[in-house]
Length: 197
Length: 437
Image (cartoon, rainbow over the protein chains, first blue to last red):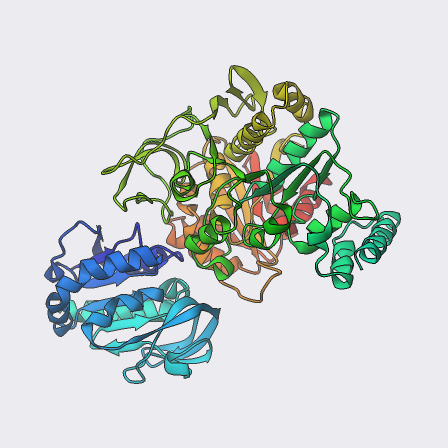
């Protein structure tokens, strides 16, 4: 069993230690003796979504969010097909703004960044979620939520945050999220193992 | 109101001196009395602002020391007092009761985000921009905010002194009408051909948005580069530091061998930056003054029996300053113990963001010459996780509460060198712990 991971645009969407999520995922895979391959995708690289089991994209400067949106929008059908196969797509921080074209959710663009410690829970895993927010975008959707927050900024002025559909997970939480929450990392690894069966 | 504010400020300054307490309280009180006081000072003919993400304190101090060595009166705010209160305190100190700054030169270190509030009053002849790197993410958010803040307020008549080695700063010449004077550290024996740091700012041309190609790197995204599509790229600057020798702590500028006052790349960059400005001021015999200032500077190390100890005063929430320390440590082939930790992240806000730990290349510590890594302070568990995820074997990582908890183990250990990477807060504790025996 080899888990194939794609990290989209790591040289550009790297605002807040985003690669910590990949480090946390691969560390946990190694702990379980599960082989993996990481492919770093560049803006000029063609993407064959069928080649991957886990795709990650993180926060970036506005110029690179725009470039990422332009690069990914032509792949809309490929992304939807990828998700139909229950494969995992994780989006953190302001990268949630890239994926409005999937028509799952809309985002609110804020005049000022919202910043602060995040504490909350999720039905995805046990225990407290510890994270951080530093974003100029929040998700508008009040359906398909991921996190219930004690502190932080939720969707649409609520204390509920994120968007999940199948194994598509979009959240404005950073941390890095997986590095700070090993239970959440385990949740994703369990899915990856299940998908390999 | 101005005169009252200055008089009260001077009285508080005097009381502070009497009580041996340096602070920015005089400026705070003066601003309470007259909030427009910065507008009302009569400034010297030559006004210099030094700003940037890091190095502005050391660079402005060196500039002020050289000018004083040449016999000039210099009004300079002391290291770190770079916000309104600190700046106003420095101005009060050098001001007459009518508000005339009694100095030949005004040299102000100014916080890069606060600069826009000060620069309109100072109207500097020179703006020295040391560098712009990722820094304090909860406050700065992205480099674009800082860049925009810095460039949006520079008067057209101000001459800018900045780094050719940093693509974003090279771009200033295209972006602004101002005259821009560049400095650079030439390729040297510490330069490297392939990037060793992750999560950097500059991978794309700021002019046309195509990929940048580097001929070599000096550190992070500093180096010589050119755009893969347009004419944007590194050009030979007006001030070039060559033949860097960190063992001898020297480099050459215009065929002069100049001391850099330390053995790291940032000592070199700070010195080149200061020289670039001093050349513009037509200060003669800069080399002589700098070599005099840096002669007999204290060693970075102190010894205790058979071990050498060194403290790196890194800047909290600034991965670049930690990377500079790690870049230096990686050159050391001796067996070493390393202490990493701090008791506070920021005095500005209550946030406990740790994302910046993942912008630090702790992976550089994953080698046989690193014996143990002690993590301590408020983020000790986060640091342990970061090191583990960086591939450091768990057996090498020791979690302790505070620096004194490492003492017995380090003093009885095998490592001949001991490094501490922290913020300002642990320097005294580190020295007290290991210097006393």
